[in-house]
Length: 456
Image (tube, rainbow, N blue to C red; front, side, top):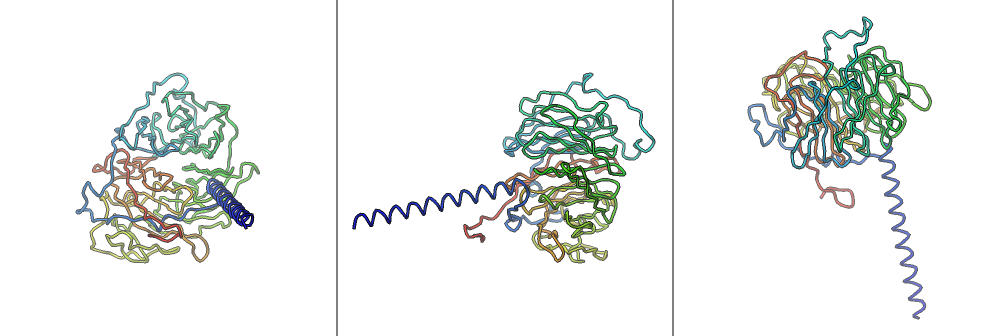
């Protein structure tokens, strides 16, 4: 009798151990798939947003936490791997490290030397900047490696500058004869590596190895300025530019895929999964793309408002002032009707520049997306299934006065950091004197989820 009971207990322990091993194996598999961009955490439906008030009803308690930085517009922001530090660059060439818990900021001590000084290079007529005039000392892009070992910045001097983000010590610059011949507009590290990708106004995408501190290769294809670049863990890079195209670069195969946008210049792009990405354009359209289709799977026309600032198209109607009541239409181009409703959000200078989407952000490994323009609202979207592919459904908005030049989610999705400025990132077409230059931090409230997948 006792022998039978002991055997039963032994079998039960073996089953529990096998179950624990299966659970651990599934967890490791899910983590690996999330890191590779193949698996998404569904968190957008858990988001609880406060009431988005009208401009006259805004106050400090509803506008997020603002951190003053430089004298000129913040152009790019990145977060450390633990989400404790934010690094920002601006048009005046300053680099700041921000402790998001304490609010303390530290300026990088950058002394110009022969190694990092700008070298004047003769330029062809098509490369001479006119309206898109950028100072030689301006910084337009920043990226940090996934192990927080290297911080890369670039901008008006055509060079990639490498820093140690922990000690804030300058390491060296990359460029010269093999570097960019015009301003650097974007930087991105491949996850889990020290492989760095850069893009610029010279129409080129370049690859750098920071293990060797050396140039690797140049990718040609864009017919005009390349304005944004992004990469996940795979050796596939997405870039967008002023030639109305997105391009997916297959590094190992040495080939590229071309995707043509409907509208004007595609100013920003971010991967959602390894085969899907979102873009924002200067005509105010927000588009979802899939690597299996040459055209966008969905397009939201003027996603950041009507001709009147702060009013957004929602199924052909004007969005009201409450979060959570808006739902974006698939491939919709709403009819522009006049309205006397008061704009919502933090206010705007108005005009066409207010609806120009200057930044998109993706909470990595999830279905949560954000977009920013100059209409006084950072809009949040959920990636959902549509009739012909993925679509974006509007969740609501967060107030933000000024031009949103960069957006970064924390990995947990619990807060969003926006790089704000009185001017757009790449030019001075419009100026919002009521805005401030710095970082805007919005806390995001996610509803707790029950073990069975439902909300508590």
